[in-house]
Length: 301
Image (cartoon, rainbow, N blue to C red; front, side, top):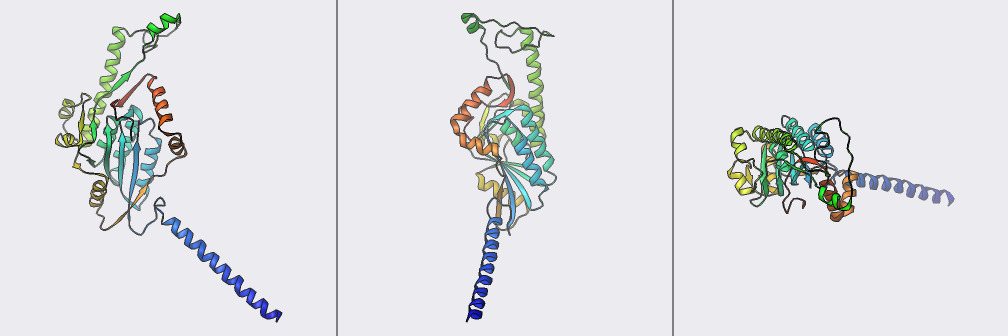
């Protein structure tokens, strides 16, 4: 009798082990097939969101490199909702997109806003898709300073500055800019503006003079941008997916693989819109030169 009970117990243990192994395998399998896993039996297209002000390039460029090296990713979509931002970071993303083109087709999909630096990045792609009402364009450079000289005089605060050269404290909030200051900064702005114009002309395969004529900071609707040759297709994100499939020669369904958010991006989501607004305000108080549109929709991804 004891021997029979032992045999039954052994059978149950074996069945339990088999069930555990099968269950674990099923969970692992489902996880691998999850939307963020990148594992799929269908062809894959990578999606990289570019939301809000461009302050850093690291997240986007590293994801571009990752998708570029992944043989399973057949094309890449840049989903842009940005008014632009820092010049250096924008140019770094542009360059990484251009380096990706020989390996993968890249489509830029514009959301509400893809202006200034947001457009600069889009111009690097193979094709650009925008909604008719997308705010885009704003090809230009902006440099802002806060002038506090009058306020400081009223409250009796003075700055003592020792400098090695005439222009070392240019843009300082405690004094007005001189004519020579403005002349020097205008030379800098024209140089960086010309870099923007040449970047768009190269990416869009347009004559430099044609780009220069509309590079005065003005914004366009997506529909108008298409008429000017700044956009290829009018449509939504799904139209961008369809275009990427066609360009990559994909038949049938595709799996969209989204870039994973970093811990800093997740923290930014937790902090919410109010915290981001405060951060952007503080950033705006710093002297900086940017490819950025400052319109009413500029900070709304």
